[in-house]
Length: 361
Image 1 (cartoon, rainbow, N blue to C red):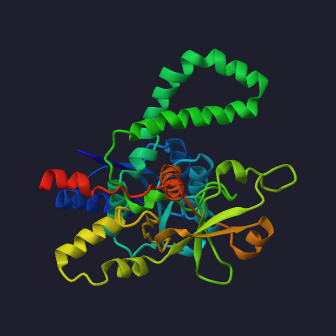
Image 2: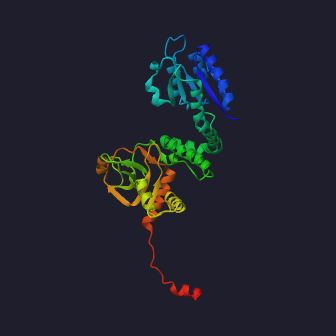
Image 3: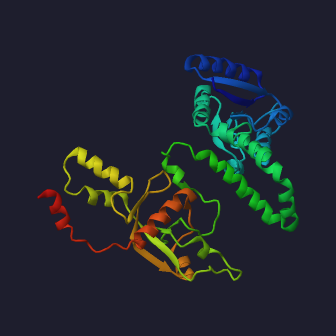
């Protein structure tokens, strides 16, 4: 049975006793199992903290309310790059250091007496149930696979990598990162074919620069485009300019606009479902490619017939910085379909009547 490892940093025994009782009732009622680890002082919390926890509940006031030591616990989590969801549970919410909001995985700041323990436990379990902490945590899948790559793939070749590092340390470090990621990607090759819409995108992008698959939006309008210039053309030279003098853009049409046209004249429910299946599986036309909607992106359809090419100056004036990037796996498919659409040659129709007559007369 899965067990959520939960750390609680609280110095008041009465508060801890109340939490223990509620946790015991919660486990019995909902059948969700927890391992609880308690810390009553800042020193104890700093000593016990590691990347193995699935969540942490932290009171801000410790040591007889002398200072906001809870903030120091959170700062330790941030500095150590521990990937732990955090809930601040305090009677003094105004003492929370808001600068830490975007630097940690903060669930929320909860006020004692206003939020019950069950609500806290539910929030932690919801995150735990996604598998996020089991993948990203110190004992998670990524850590396990990284150890395998290190021992099985890198260690036997270490002399070669040492020679590369002696020649160019920075380049070798990046190459090792790519090499390691390639091995991690291999884990996904036999995975199920269906994915969630969010997997199509990187949001926000890890890199700020424009690259193939960047989604950009007009400064003065709502129209969005995808950059489809080849990656080699978007390499920035020493003078700050791209290798190409034009950036190729493909317009994104609204989802409902394309769907309504595709369903025009279709009345039967089954026929509509069949047509929609074609539309969302990119079998409707050669020139549309579906981009699914998410909470952070309206989605739509790339229309390969609606192209634009701008120089860098005009591009910078017209578009905002990209906040969404299509992930590499899906960019490859888009570029392949785009290339196929414009590479199609076709051939004259051959008069096949005589051949058909041979079998029908």
